[in-house]
Image (tube, rainbow, N blue to C red):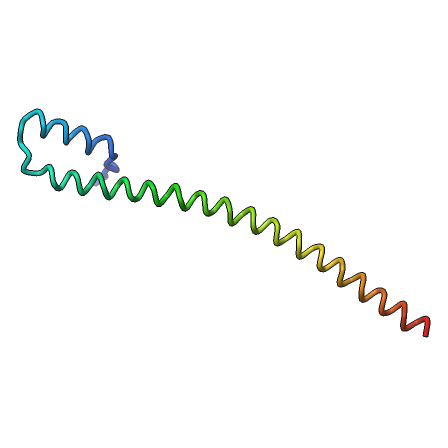
Length: 86
């Protein structure tokens, strides 16, 4: 069996139908469902934003690591050169 994902728009449409028929017996459940869907969408958007920030930070850190490794190599080469000169 296949179940299609329920969308916020379909929940809102059901709310409109409940209002048109003046049958409010299940309106509370629809409101909770819409609230839950809205919360998930907001959290997903925030997660995407945080993911983008994390990728930018990762790129900066990788660049910093490369620079530090190059400095380390430079210092090691300088030490070897100083030892040879002694």
